[in-house]
Image (cartoon, rainbow over all chains, first blue to last red; front, side, top):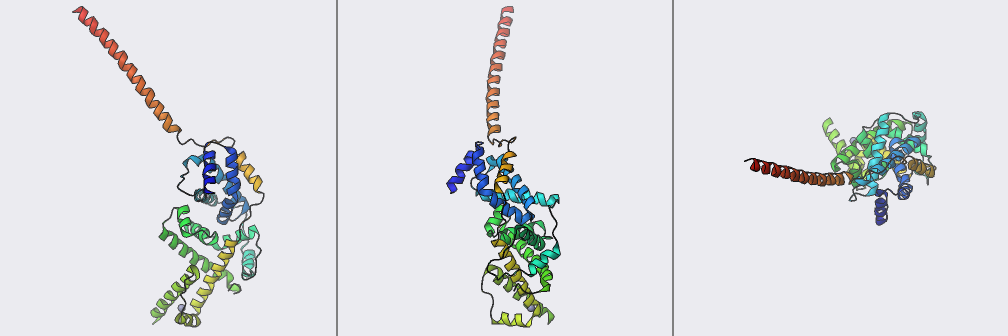
Amino acid sequence: MQQDIVNIIEEVKSGNKMAFKHLVEEHQQYAFNVAFRVVCNEEDAKDVVQDCFIKIWKNINSFNAKLKFTTWMYKIVINSAIDKLRSGKRANMINIDNVSEKLCHLDLNGPDVQIENQEIGNIISLISDGLPEKQKLVFVLRDIQGFDSVEVQNILDMHETSVKSNLYNARQFVRKKLSKLLACERRLI
Amino acid sequence: MRKEVDMNCNIVREKIYKQVYTDTREFDDELMRHLNDCPACNSYYKDCRSVKKITSLLNQKQAVLNNPKKLTNDILDSLNEIKPKKKSTGFYISINAKRFLAAASVCLMIVFAYEQYVAMEKIIKLE
Ligand SMILES: [Zn+2]
Protein backbone atom coordinates (compact mmCIF):
# COMPACT_ATOMS: atom_id res chain seq x y z
CA MET A 1 0.00 0.00 0.00
CA GLN A 2 2.79 2.39 1.00
CA GLN A 3 4.69 1.37 -2.14
CA ASP A 4 1.56 2.01 -4.22
CA ILE A 5 1.31 5.59 -3.06
CA VAL A 6 5.04 6.12 -3.65
CA ASN A 7 4.64 4.88 -7.24
CA ILE A 8 1.54 7.02 -7.81
CA ILE A 9 3.33 10.11 -6.52
CA GLU A 10 6.30 9.43 -8.81
CA GLU A 11 3.88 9.22 -11.74
CA VAL A 12 2.18 12.47 -10.69
CA LYS A 13 5.59 14.15 -10.46
CA SER A 14 6.19 13.27 -14.09
CA GLY A 15 2.88 14.93 -15.01
CA ASN A 16 0.69 11.82 -15.35
CA LYS A 17 -2.91 13.03 -15.00
CA MET A 18 -4.38 9.55 -14.78
CA ALA A 19 -2.18 8.86 -11.76
CA PHE A 20 -3.30 12.15 -10.27
CA LYS A 21 -6.95 11.23 -10.90
CA HIS A 22 -6.35 8.01 -9.01
CA LEU A 23 -4.73 9.96 -6.16
CA VAL A 24 -7.75 12.29 -5.97
CA GLU A 25 -10.25 9.43 -6.04
CA GLU A 26 -8.43 7.61 -3.26
CA HIS A 27 -8.05 10.60 -0.95
CA GLN A 28 -10.79 13.16 -1.60
CA GLN A 29 -13.23 11.64 0.91
CA TYR A 30 -10.63 11.85 3.69
CA ALA A 31 -9.73 15.41 2.72
CA PHE A 32 -13.42 16.33 2.59
CA ASN A 33 -14.09 14.86 6.02
CA VAL A 34 -11.36 16.93 7.67
CA ALA A 35 -12.25 20.07 5.70
CA PHE A 36 -15.91 19.69 6.62
CA ARG A 37 -15.09 19.48 10.33
CA VAL A 38 -13.23 22.77 10.12
CA VAL A 39 -15.48 24.83 7.83
CA CYS A 40 -18.71 23.05 8.86
CA ASN A 41 -20.60 23.07 5.56
CA GLU A 42 -20.50 21.00 2.37
CA GLU A 43 -19.97 23.71 -0.24
CA ASP A 44 -17.06 25.31 1.57
CA ALA A 45 -15.56 21.89 2.30
CA LYS A 46 -15.71 20.97 -1.42
CA ASP A 47 -14.00 24.28 -2.31
CA VAL A 48 -11.30 23.48 0.24
CA VAL A 49 -10.76 19.99 -1.20
CA GLN A 50 -10.56 21.36 -4.75
CA ASP A 51 -8.09 24.03 -3.68
CA CYS A 52 -6.10 21.41 -1.78
CA PHE A 53 -5.68 19.07 -4.76
CA ILE A 54 -4.77 21.94 -7.09
CA LYS A 55 -2.00 22.85 -4.62
CA ILE A 56 -0.93 19.20 -4.48
CA TRP A 57 -0.67 19.06 -8.29
CA LYS A 58 1.29 22.32 -8.40
CA ASN A 59 3.64 21.43 -5.57
CA ILE A 60 3.98 17.66 -5.81
CA ASN A 61 7.72 18.04 -6.47
CA SER A 62 8.20 19.61 -3.08
CA PHE A 63 6.56 16.63 -1.33
CA ASN A 64 9.00 15.18 1.15
CA ALA A 65 8.79 11.39 0.93
CA LYS A 66 9.85 11.13 4.59
CA LEU A 67 6.41 12.49 5.51
CA LYS A 68 3.24 10.41 5.13
CA PHE A 69 1.34 11.61 2.06
CA THR A 70 -1.87 11.97 4.07
CA THR A 71 -0.11 14.12 6.69
CA TRP A 72 1.10 16.44 3.91
CA MET A 73 -2.38 16.45 2.37
CA TYR A 74 -4.03 17.30 5.71
CA LYS A 75 -1.56 20.15 6.22
CA ILE A 76 -2.71 21.59 2.89
CA VAL A 77 -6.38 20.93 3.72
CA ILE A 78 -6.02 22.78 7.02
CA ASN A 79 -4.27 25.75 5.40
CA SER A 80 -6.95 26.01 2.72
CA ALA A 81 -9.67 25.66 5.36
CA ILE A 82 -8.11 28.45 7.43
CA ASP A 83 -8.08 30.68 4.34
CA LYS A 84 -11.74 29.84 3.83
CA LEU A 85 -12.63 30.66 7.42
CA ARG A 86 -10.64 33.91 7.32
CA SER A 87 -12.34 34.98 4.10
CA GLY A 88 -15.47 35.14 6.24
CA LYS A 89 -17.76 33.95 3.47
CA ARG A 90 -19.84 31.21 5.04
CA ALA A 91 -22.15 29.29 2.72
CA ASN A 92 -24.90 29.24 5.32
CA MET A 93 -25.59 30.55 8.79
CA ILE A 94 -26.83 28.20 11.46
CA ASN A 95 -29.87 28.64 13.62
CA ILE A 96 -28.51 28.30 17.16
CA ASP A 97 -31.90 27.52 18.70
CA ASN A 98 -32.55 24.67 16.27
CA VAL A 99 -29.13 23.12 16.83
CA SER A 100 -29.36 23.49 20.61
CA GLU A 101 -32.73 21.79 20.46
CA LYS A 102 -31.21 18.97 18.40
CA LEU A 103 -28.34 18.64 20.88
CA CYS A 104 -30.69 18.55 23.86
CA HIS A 105 -32.63 15.70 22.36
CA LEU A 106 -29.77 13.60 21.04
CA ASP A 107 -29.95 10.20 22.63
CA LEU A 108 -26.23 9.50 22.85
CA ASN A 109 -26.85 6.18 24.52
CA GLY A 110 -28.99 4.93 21.64
CA PRO A 111 -27.70 2.16 19.36
CA ASP A 112 -27.06 4.30 16.26
CA VAL A 113 -27.76 8.00 16.16
CA GLN A 114 -28.68 9.17 12.68
CA ILE A 115 -27.27 12.60 11.86
CA GLU A 116 -27.17 14.26 8.45
CA ASN A 117 -24.05 15.97 7.13
CA GLN A 118 -25.38 19.45 7.81
CA GLU A 119 -26.45 18.54 11.33
CA ILE A 120 -22.91 17.34 12.05
CA GLY A 121 -21.59 20.65 10.70
CA ASN A 122 -24.07 22.68 12.72
CA ILE A 123 -23.21 20.92 15.97
CA ILE A 124 -19.46 21.30 15.41
CA SER A 125 -19.99 24.93 14.52
CA LEU A 126 -22.15 25.52 17.57
CA ILE A 127 -19.69 24.05 20.06
CA SER A 128 -16.46 25.32 18.49
CA ASP A 129 -17.33 28.78 17.16
CA GLY A 130 -15.62 31.43 19.24
CA LEU A 131 -12.55 29.30 19.91
CA PRO A 132 -9.22 30.88 18.98
CA GLU A 133 -7.95 29.42 15.68
CA LYS A 134 -5.23 27.16 17.12
CA GLN A 135 -7.52 25.79 19.82
CA LYS A 136 -10.25 25.12 17.28
CA LEU A 137 -7.89 23.22 14.96
CA VAL A 138 -6.42 21.11 17.76
CA PHE A 139 -9.88 20.37 19.16
CA VAL A 140 -11.34 19.44 15.77
CA LEU A 141 -8.40 17.25 14.72
CA ARG A 142 -7.91 15.54 18.08
CA ASP A 143 -11.40 15.17 19.56
CA ILE A 144 -13.74 15.30 16.57
CA GLN A 145 -11.57 13.81 13.83
CA GLY A 146 -9.87 11.40 16.26
CA PHE A 147 -6.26 11.85 15.14
CA ASP A 148 -3.64 10.92 17.71
CA SER A 149 -1.49 13.57 19.34
CA VAL A 150 1.57 12.92 17.14
CA GLU A 151 -0.47 13.23 13.94
CA VAL A 152 -1.94 16.52 15.16
CA GLN A 153 1.56 17.79 16.01
CA ASN A 154 2.76 16.89 12.50
CA ILE A 155 -0.22 18.38 10.69
CA LEU A 156 -0.17 21.66 12.61
CA ASP A 157 3.62 21.85 13.12
CA MET A 158 3.06 22.25 16.84
CA HIS A 159 4.99 21.01 19.84
CA GLU A 160 3.45 18.33 22.05
CA THR A 161 3.01 20.71 25.01
CA SER A 162 1.38 23.29 22.78
CA VAL A 163 -1.09 20.71 21.48
CA LYS A 164 -1.86 19.63 25.05
CA SER A 165 -2.44 23.14 26.40
CA ASN A 166 -4.51 24.25 23.39
CA LEU A 167 -6.59 21.09 23.69
CA TYR A 168 -7.13 21.61 27.42
CA ASN A 169 -8.24 25.22 26.91
CA ALA A 170 -10.49 24.25 24.00
CA ARG A 171 -12.18 21.50 26.01
CA GLN A 172 -12.80 23.91 28.90
CA PHE A 173 -14.28 26.46 26.48
CA VAL A 174 -16.55 23.86 24.91
CA ARG A 175 -17.56 22.53 28.33
CA LYS A 176 -18.65 25.97 29.50
CA LYS A 177 -20.48 26.61 26.25
CA LEU A 178 -22.28 23.27 26.35
CA SER A 179 -23.09 23.73 30.00
CA LYS A 180 -25.11 26.83 29.15
CA LEU A 181 -26.69 25.26 26.06
CA LEU A 182 -27.65 22.06 27.81
CA ALA A 183 -28.94 23.70 30.95
CA CYS A 184 -32.36 22.85 29.53
CA GLU A 185 -31.92 19.22 30.38
CA ARG A 186 -29.43 16.61 31.52
CA ARG A 187 -30.29 13.83 29.12
CA LEU A 188 -26.75 13.47 27.89
CA ILE A 189 -25.45 12.04 31.14
CA MET B 1 -11.03 27.82 54.88
CA ARG B 2 -12.51 28.92 51.52
CA LYS B 3 -9.08 28.60 49.89
CA GLU B 4 -8.76 25.03 51.08
CA VAL B 5 -12.07 24.15 49.47
CA ASP B 6 -11.00 25.78 46.17
CA MET B 7 -7.69 23.93 46.21
CA ASN B 8 -9.48 20.69 46.84
CA CYS B 9 -11.90 21.39 43.98
CA ASN B 10 -8.99 22.11 41.64
CA ILE B 11 -7.35 18.79 42.47
CA VAL B 12 -10.66 16.99 42.03
CA ARG B 13 -11.20 18.65 38.63
CA GLU B 14 -7.73 17.69 37.47
CA LYS B 15 -8.57 14.10 38.34
CA ILE B 16 -11.95 14.33 36.61
CA TYR B 17 -10.27 15.68 33.45
CA LYS B 18 -7.74 12.83 33.47
CA GLN B 19 -10.42 10.23 34.12
CA VAL B 20 -12.63 11.48 31.28
CA TYR B 21 -9.92 12.12 28.69
CA THR B 22 -7.10 9.69 29.37
CA ASP B 23 -8.99 6.60 30.51
CA THR B 24 -6.89 6.40 33.66
CA ARG B 25 -8.63 5.42 36.90
CA GLU B 26 -8.54 8.52 39.07
CA PHE B 27 -11.70 8.09 41.09
CA ASP B 28 -11.45 6.82 44.65
CA ASP B 29 -13.82 6.90 47.63
CA GLU B 30 -12.62 10.32 48.75
CA LEU B 31 -13.23 11.80 45.31
CA MET B 32 -16.67 10.19 45.09
CA ARG B 33 -17.57 11.69 48.48
CA HIS B 34 -16.40 15.10 47.21
CA LEU B 35 -18.61 14.75 44.12
CA ASN B 36 -21.59 13.95 46.32
CA ASP B 37 -20.96 16.95 48.57
CA CYS B 38 -19.85 19.53 45.97
CA PRO B 39 -22.50 20.50 43.38
CA ALA B 40 -19.99 22.58 41.39
CA CYS B 41 -17.59 19.68 40.87
CA ASN B 42 -20.53 17.39 40.23
CA SER B 43 -21.68 19.68 37.40
CA TYR B 44 -18.11 19.90 36.12
CA TYR B 45 -17.95 16.11 35.90
CA LYS B 46 -21.30 15.86 34.10
CA ASP B 47 -20.35 18.62 31.64
CA CYS B 48 -16.99 16.98 30.86
CA ARG B 49 -18.77 13.72 30.16
CA SER B 50 -21.29 15.49 27.92
CA VAL B 51 -18.50 17.05 25.87
CA LYS B 52 -16.74 13.70 25.62
CA LYS B 53 -19.93 11.94 24.51
CA ILE B 54 -20.77 14.53 21.88
CA THR B 55 -17.24 14.61 20.45
CA SER B 56 -17.14 10.79 20.43
CA LEU B 57 -20.42 10.74 18.52
CA LEU B 58 -19.14 13.32 16.00
CA ASN B 59 -15.94 11.32 15.71
CA GLN B 60 -17.89 8.25 14.64
CA LYS B 61 -19.90 10.14 12.02
CA GLN B 62 -18.12 10.68 8.72
CA ALA B 63 -19.24 13.65 6.66
CA VAL B 64 -20.26 11.95 3.43
CA LEU B 65 -19.00 13.46 0.18
CA ASN B 66 -21.98 13.51 -2.16
CA ASN B 67 -21.25 13.07 -5.87
CA PRO B 68 -17.50 12.42 -5.54
CA LYS B 69 -17.13 11.92 -9.33
CA LYS B 70 -18.18 15.50 -9.97
CA LEU B 71 -15.62 16.81 -7.49
CA THR B 72 -12.89 14.67 -9.10
CA ASN B 73 -13.84 16.02 -12.54
CA ASP B 74 -13.96 19.62 -11.27
CA ILE B 75 -10.47 19.18 -9.84
CA LEU B 76 -9.12 17.65 -13.06
CA ASP B 77 -10.78 20.34 -15.20
CA SER B 78 -9.09 23.05 -13.19
CA LEU B 79 -5.66 21.52 -13.95
CA ASN B 80 -5.81 22.13 -17.68
CA GLU B 81 -3.73 25.26 -17.56
CA ILE B 82 -1.45 24.19 -14.73
CA LYS B 83 1.68 22.08 -14.90
CA PRO B 84 3.47 20.72 -11.84
CA LYS B 85 6.47 22.82 -10.93
CA LYS B 86 9.70 21.12 -12.00
CA LYS B 87 11.72 21.33 -8.82
CA SER B 88 15.01 20.65 -10.63
CA THR B 89 14.61 23.00 -13.61
CA GLY B 90 16.33 25.94 -11.94
CA PHE B 91 19.31 23.76 -11.00
CA TYR B 92 19.85 22.48 -14.56
CA ILE B 93 19.54 25.98 -16.00
CA SER B 94 22.18 27.29 -13.63
CA ILE B 95 24.55 24.40 -14.51
CA ASN B 96 24.09 25.04 -18.24
CA ALA B 97 24.57 28.75 -17.71
CA LYS B 98 27.80 28.09 -15.81
CA ARG B 99 29.11 25.84 -18.62
CA PHE B 100 28.23 28.48 -21.20
CA LEU B 101 29.98 31.21 -19.22
CA ALA B 102 33.06 29.03 -18.74
CA ALA B 103 33.27 28.29 -22.48
CA ALA B 104 32.74 31.96 -23.36
CA SER B 105 35.48 33.11 -20.99
CA VAL B 106 37.95 30.56 -22.45
CA CYS B 107 37.14 31.84 -25.96
CA LEU B 108 37.65 35.44 -24.85
CA MET B 109 40.98 34.57 -23.24
CA ILE B 110 42.16 32.93 -26.51
CA VAL B 111 41.05 36.00 -28.53
CA PHE B 112 42.80 38.41 -26.12
CA ALA B 113 45.94 36.27 -26.04
CA TYR B 114 46.05 36.17 -29.85
CA GLU B 115 45.58 39.97 -30.09
CA GLN B 116 48.28 40.44 -27.50
CA TYR B 117 50.59 38.18 -29.50
CA VAL B 118 49.89 40.13 -32.74
CA ALA B 119 50.45 43.47 -30.97
CA MET B 120 53.74 42.25 -29.45
CA GLU B 121 54.90 41.03 -32.89
CA LYS B 122 54.20 44.51 -34.37
CA ILE B 123 56.09 46.25 -31.55
CA ILE B 124 59.08 43.94 -32.02
CA LYS B 125 59.09 44.57 -35.78
CA LEU B 126 58.92 48.36 -35.23
CA GLU B 127 61.84 48.22 -32.83
ZN1 LIG C 1 -15.57 20.73 44.49
